[in-house]
Image 1: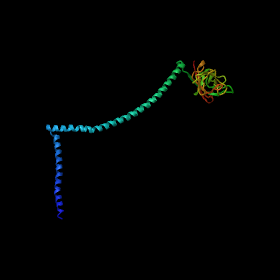
Image 2: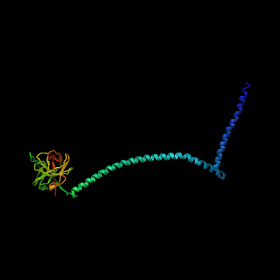
Image 3: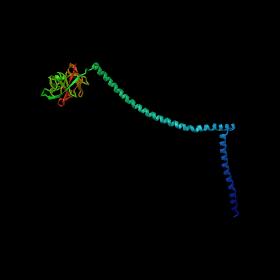
Image 4: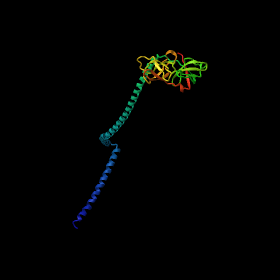
Length: 277
């Protein structure tokens, strides 16, 4: 038991020393804080110089610490700007492609317009008046194809006037009474219409053959007429105005055959064109 008492005695001696050390640290920290606070408020030249020296030493360190953060912000701004510029570049590229396509279409239309103006010699077309009447009777037979309309000279209808429907030409007036007129249809064997093909620009005379498919005569030996192209009036001879749709080429073997666009059998109203050559 005598050997254990010194240990207990030494434990009682060490505890007060530790408590005094802890209290001294707190006291020193309080004194340092009060000193720094006093230096911040003091106007003494020596204190001001010391405070300035400390600030000069700290500012470069703060600048070095802040520099990476600023670099990161600048990098983020640069990446965002690059993404925006890339999207804008893609949009402008797509718009440029669209504009290039429209430019090509515009040039093609301009070339076609110039060709058409040269073909027409830039002569303005005269205005025509139209007299709309009703088909009252079909006078067609095995070879004679004609129709009777309920309008004559009293309504302004005259001999040789072109007669059309919404689809195209059906014939011309061959006889005109006071209140009625007879129309010779395109399929009649006596029908003759000066025409031109739209694509190959081949002029000819479309002749009725007594059935539904007239033919083109007086074509050039090296004719380039193709199946499917439209046939319109050429205006030659001064009877029919130029540009009236007539039919579509359906065959070129042997003779060039044309299917008329307008069907008189299905027409109720027609218009006679008062055309002055």
